[in-house]
Image 1 (tube, rainbow, N blue to C red):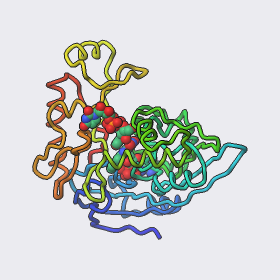
Image 2: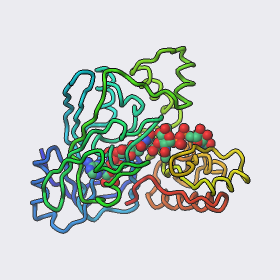
Image 3: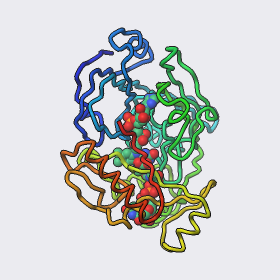
Image 4: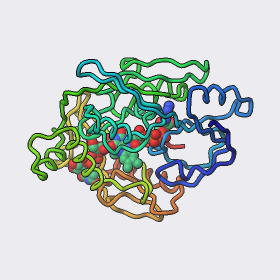
Length: 337
Ligand code: FAD
Ligand code: EPU
């Protein structure tokens, strides 16, 4: 049931485990709750923060406004031949949806196993892992427009997906709240196992003809080996995006650094930010209460009582070092507040 709470600690609501407070906090279970919230005079003119699982956030100070936490439940599907359209509420835990689909033999989400967070946030940065992005299975989403209190459907084209990017991070930033997302899945799996680590782990397990559940299990195992579990060590996954540079910049860079880890992409060359950071000597480094993860330099961690400011300052240090050594500017993937 919808309620508006005051003076709420956000520590349980962000995977970095940063302890800041919000003036107002509303847990939202339906579009009707959103209507009630936005017609409530107590919140008029206040700043808003739309929150899912808080797994891509760094809080650097108390929030003087209203946290709108999406908890809209429900997973439904319809079948047409081999195609399955699955629709899930914004508050559904992403990995619960993946598990539901894998268990039912619905293919398409298996490479995105164990990504933290909610369904509602998945289109925001077009989540991706192990050779698949949300855009590959996205059909549409429903979103609530804050200015008009009306819902609107967004098609694939409307969302303007890019690498860790969508219209919701750009032109429409802060204007819409995603309430549900629909995915186009299939019973005939077209499994994506080309990502090096997947191929290696399948071979390691002697799996020659993998099924959906095999790919999901392999992705889960790779992730657990590389990434810290937020329930034991605070983090928000990759802190920075992998930078994309022009072919000309790349040719200059590779002259000086022949080992630079790179992947050709449509608009240039993508570099592995984790490699750049490691080369600057940051991998596994501990600085006060923060640092980088020992198995993945791209992940910044909270060793216990870090403040958001402390993590943010450390991220500045990393940006400066990488820029000095490689002439490449890292951009944060995590949302800073
Ligand atoms: P939040 O952190 O709560 O919010 C993220 C952003 O979306 C904020 O700007 C927020 O305002 C906005 N938002 C949230 N919900 C809504 C909504 N319903 N409507 C409108 N705006 C909304 N990401 C990947 O892409 N790939 C990975 O492999 C990956 N691995 C990770 C591993 C770990 C250990 C962790 C901690 C994070 C990882 N992430 C990864 C990042 C994170 O899981 C994703 O960005 C996820 O989609 C965030 O979901 P959330 O519900 O926690 O969003
Ligand atoms: N590497 C290093 N040192 C490190 C980390 C990485 O040298 O400390 C090099 C290695 O050569 C490795 C390469 O970087 O082969 C790529 O590393 P990895 O496969 O771990 O992937 P990533 O590029 O670091 C990206 C996403 C992850 C996603 C994985 C798997 C971004 C910013 N990150 O990481 O997403 O899970 O690929 O697809 O694109 C997230 O967004 O939060 C996230 C975790």
